[in-house]
Length: 269
Image (cartoon, rainbow, N blue to C red):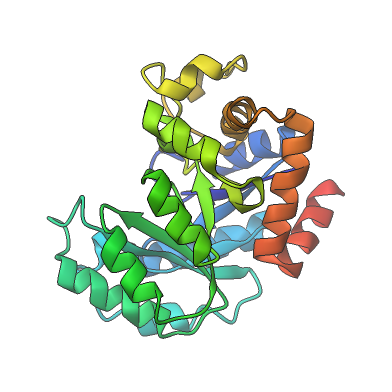
C-alpha cells in the first residue's frame, strides 16, 4: 500500500472521479485530496467521505487575494474526522501576479494562527519569508512538490518538516541531486495529479522502466502513476523498491498518525 499525499481530485480534468479512484485502488495507492480554496475544500471533504480517505482544507497562496477572509470558513471544517491537515497553504512568489506577496503572507499567517497539528505546505521562490514565518510556530508539516535547493531542503528538515517529492521535483539534474541528498525518513511521495507528470523532457525520466498502459494517462497524471515517482527515488537513493515502499509507508504513518492507519486498514479490506 502506498500513500499519494497530493491528489487534486476537484480538478476539472477529473471528469469521473470514480474511475480515478478505481485505478488508484488497483495500484494499491491511497490518494489524499487537496483543497485550494473554501469551495474545493468542501468538495474534497465530501469526496473523502465518499471514497473513505482523507483530505486537506485550506487556501492556496495564489488564491489569497480572491479568498482573503475565508479563513474562518476553513476553520469550521477542521473538526471533521476526514480532515487530516490544513492546506494547501503557504507562499508562491513565482506567481505573485495572482496575489501579492503581502496578501499571501497575511493569509498564510491567518491559517497558521488556527494552530493546526499538521499543515500541507507550499513554498515556491519564497524560502526566506517562508522560514521566517513558520519559525514562529510549532507544528508537523510537509512542504509538497518541492523544487528548491539542497540547502533549502536542509533548512526545512531542521525545522522538522517532511519533503514532498513528485514529478516536478525530478525535472532537472539539480532536482535529482537534491532528492539524492534527502534523508529517507523525511521523504513523502505524491503525484499532485492531474499535474506534475514525469515527462520525457525531465531529467528523472531516464530512470523509468515503468510505462503507463492507459491511454488517458498520456495526457495527465493520476494517483495510479505514483509508482513512477517511487521508482526514480529508489534508483537515486539506491534502495530496492520494496524496501523504499516500506519506508515511505512508515513516513506517512508518522506524519498522518492514527487516521491514516484506519484508512489503510479499510482500503486493505
